[in-house]
Length: 281
Length: 227
Image (cartoon, rainbow over all chains, first blue to last red):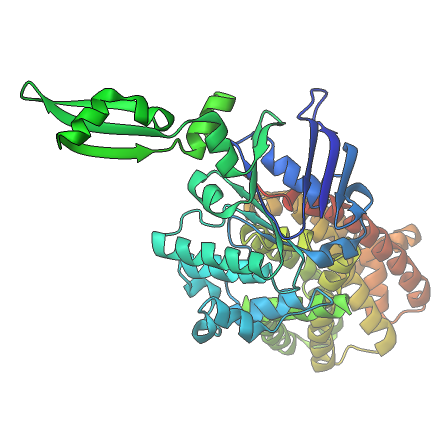
């Protein structure tokens, strides 16, 4: 679906994107994680054919991005972080207009129903809440049924309930066979949604793997337990792999002296900080 | 056809955002003023009104339209769609040209100043497209209405001053190459209407092609995702 080989790009004489290579397979959700200014935006502009003066190879849907024709856009959809809609037009009018720019068009009422907006279809976008605008913006990217979707911070600024709705929509599109490129600062979204993630810092990919592999390869799961000793509450921490070797823990279990016991894994953010020395958020 | 879809979208946008009400208001106002003037002034006054308003409206409206599209980030979606820059330019010029021509015809018919309808209609339409293209060129490069108003002052002076001078008697033959003066001659249906039409076509094409290049640059710069 996407193949990037030895990509180099710069705005000035200094390299901005350096020797980036990766592949995205059909049906995959691939996440770009990185702090602001890391190069995610530039990378996305290159993948969507807006920046064309790069060196290396960038093939998207079988077409080299720098020599793309306008029909290139018939098969990609972009959901921007902020709504890109005519505020004084209704939701239906917006979708009808944007759909008219493409050859292939999905049924608008069906799309509106899928995100719970069918009853608000004739309402002006300016009267929509933030969550409604996000859902409308999302289905706008699906109007022409593209095989490849670029989602930019899809849950940014949404309350937990709307965020859940958005994540379910993304997962349902994956189920329908879409390939999705997700750009986010949110490690929890990335962990939940992405099949693979790339950590981008200073224009380079510092790590690329499944969230599970990244977490497991760099940080061992740990157990933290608490108990009473000499009238005081104490706590201890051991690696999960060393549980059976911890005689003190075994003794506390046998004597029913444990106050609490918790297991924990490092988050993707911890791994990001460990690998890159930078914070995601 | 995508240009048709864009054109219809632009017309809907202009109606929803109240542009057509402004046109209607000024049409009624101008026709009222023309009827209040002595009949011997009517032709000159009508030409001045058509030149300075329906024909020139694209210059101002284009700033408002593109600024709305920028502020609502709609251009981001246009940039990653199959829309070609020339289609975007064409739909903008045609949509403004369409309503400008209707308003000019209304003023012209009401004041009974149309002597050669073909030259009158094509003149207004082309001049509207020309002004819209110039407005588009400025609008692509600015981010606020204040900037737009200031940026367009030199263009307004260059376009308006020679044309008004011509209208009031300063008529050197070389000034016929000025697009505003070409329009005046077309509105009058004078003997130099045909060369004036050719001159106006050349100017309109020149600025439309220039606008296309600038729109292309603008769409590339706005279309990326800002993180």
